[in-house]
Structures are given as structure tokens and as C-alpha cells.
Amino acid sequence: MNGAVFDAGAVFDAITVHNFSERILEQVVHFHVMKLSGGFFLWVGSSPVLSNLAVSMSSRYDSMPLSTLVIGDPSNTAPNSLAQRLAKKTKKQVYVSYSVPMTDSNLSLLVENRIKKELELHPEHF
Image (cartoon, rainbow, N blue to C red; front, side, top):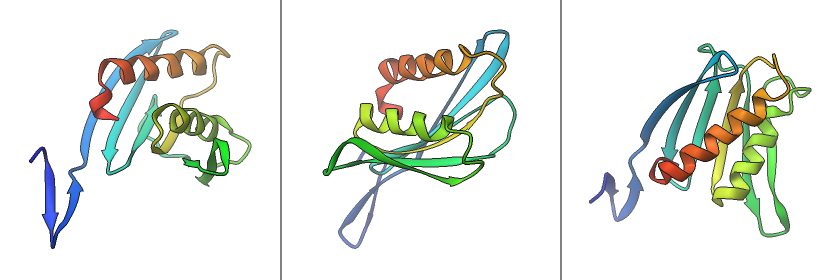
């Protein structure tokens, strides 16, 4: 039944993993998506580091999803804002770890555009 696991009447979707990479402004950026039940975890980085983690989810009390930084430097707003925009777009709970050095102001915009392109091409992974 489509990767679903049954346990005493409850249905749990299997965790699936989707990886892709892209050269953006002469920098190779890796993307790792783990689809979870009701949401997904997205790691974006140029080296294998988990330096921050933000979570965001929709709220019935506000049109903008709630978002908080679970681990990392609070002065780095990239994981929070990306998680919030993805939660708003997908209507799912989103975890984001964003570990791309800010070498160019356009880099984060291009990275986000690449994520949106992947969302359109492969919505089943999110």
C-alpha cells in the first residue's frame, strides 16, 4: 500500500529520501529531502554540516506560518525564513537546515529558486 506501515490500526507513511545537487554561482550546493508523515526535512549545504535547524508550520491564528530556530546561531535568519516560506507554499510542517556560506547576496535567492523548481518537478518527494 504505497510504502505505508500498519501498526494496530494506525497508518504511517514510510520516510523517503530524495537528493539532488546543483552548481550555483560556481559553488556546488547539495539538497537532501526526507519526506515525513505530514511534512518534510530539507538540508541544504555545500559541506556535510548540520549547523542549524529551523521548524515551521501553519497556524489557524495567522496567515504566516509559525517558525522557530531549534539549534544554531539566531543571527542567521536563513533557515527560519526558508522554512516559513516553504511551510506557506506546501501547507506542511517543514524542518530546514541551511548551511550554505553567504558568498554572494544572490546565492540564497538562487538556492530557493532551485528548491521551488524541484518542488514543481517532483512534488511527491516533499
